[in-house]
Length: 245
Image (cartoon, rainbow, N blue to C red):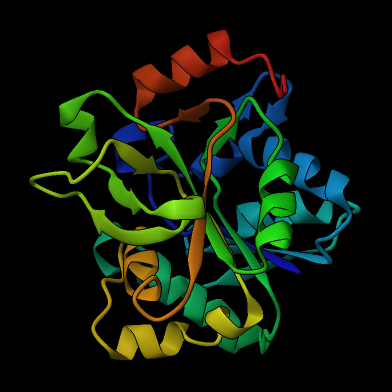
């Protein structure tokens, strides 16, 4: 299994902190956001390569970070240098697949969130289901629902649909940016892009994929800390206690 880490964004809402530095390498406590994620994932001993998809502006920061690690980390530079020219998450995924010739199961994660539970639970869930998988959590705030990917769930956790940032949300199930794609489904990403799948938000790929494959959705067993602006970053630094469950 490969772990694709989406880290090619420009985090403009965190300026000036991230004007010349990537958000995933900001510190929370004594670790970077990325270290919290990959050190946890690696305890499952199922990922044989971590692939960080960066933009050109921040690629050297990630290369220096990777060089200090003993884990197998590859940094892919997508060649963009501004927020206006970014490829978008789905095109970045396909760029990494084509650049590295990937043909494997893929754990795809956003590199700018921290969790209070272990992602190994999600990896085990996907192995049990034998399908591509997402996670979901219940969101009660109507305003936040309109800014999320919203899932409709059927029997046995089956993902029936996903809609990104809907004007009229069909459920209270929000979808965080953590996904598992089987090898067979990962091979369909190019087809999804060619078919007109949205490419900016990673949930757009799930929206397409659940119409062309079987996907299950695990209820998130803890809390996700989304670092979207300076205020939320300061709150996470003060309140995050690490993986608790």
